[in-house]
Length: 568
Image (cartoon, rainbow, N blue to C red; front, side):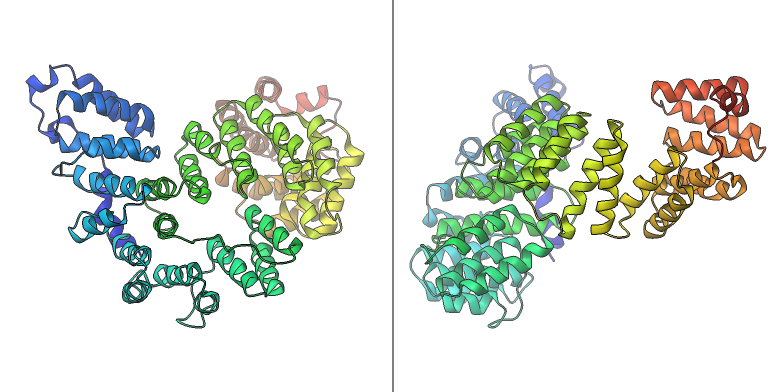
């Protein structure tokens, strides 16, 4: 829906391919800012917006007025949510080239953060607004802020005749609720007035609050529960609990001012543009703009954090999640995001510490205890992970299907600490709750294969897992391996070859294929696969065993191991 608009703005945030594109002369490059510019380019390409901002500003000091440098300096500050500084860089000038659109955006966001609706209208009418996604709908909220609701309605309805119909009608519903017309708002958001509007987490939140204002608490709870069955959004869970426990609705507080409406507009457009699957540049700018206009708009922080995660800027993601204040409905989710970003940055101990603090602060939340278990498991700390998973299970109804995953992950930890009886019990309990779950079938079946027991049952489990996920190389490997254990070597060749095709760089799968080839007399191909497995750097114990097979052959290795391993 928004792709054609994206292309018209995205160039404003793109780095030019070489210094010559900026019109620099050789003497320019010798005046001391070439190093700053090159450092800025490198940082910007890497998504290191903080260093990019510092270096672009240093280069700009040596070449004031350069539109390219102005645009990139503004972008770097805006990407960090530093709109005041971005507006200062933009100044009162209107640079040519790619700096122009970014300067307009920075000035508008900075003005709106101070409630300057008059300046925003003047900028839009002069063609210097925030861009084609925002400007027409922003005029509707500005009219709302002026107290002219009829003009706001007319503007929303006019925009709804084009590509932004869904957002326009949604925001008209928000505006109706903001003036206390909850009946009109519900009629719009339910689809009764203009037809269906998208049921996002934000629309559901607004509708639930509106229904509560209309003394329709049961309808509000059913709406939330219906959405949560598909998407277990933590902030909506918290809202549902508050509505369920309240005797009467409190003040409506979703979007109540033009400033909040404009922030929500930037956020909604950010999400819509992000769904087009293109660059994260514009979604990030608009998400940060929403937070700049409304400091309480935590949903935009969460989205900006996820965009940084997508770009593998885990440091910026963690910093962004950390800005969600304690007590906010999104605080727990933000801390989970922060912990995962810290973990992905490579600091596992710090990530576990974040999760441990959150689990201690919220011992009542099973999701937090389970997430702590996941973090410990990922850190190879399975013994304490078992305790965390047990705490999570003690907080939930373990007869519900949703409990299967905690049983499954706890089973994995029991297996890894070599405590098989409770591991098998948890695996089987997970299958009782979620029959046919391919991950559980594969893990339990493969474990039985490695223990050389119940191989017929293991084969049945793995065949069912393969049928459910035929494109999984790891599950297909399990099928080949159980056939190998059963001594059905000829039958094992095809699934093992298919597993290698699906996961060509996995050392264990290549090693397994080598074993299968050896058992069907394809010795040279077996040795090739073992060499290939070594090239993918398996763990030391596996690498040593592969070298032994290359030296003396698989038969001698199996004999040295006691003659166990080829078949049942």
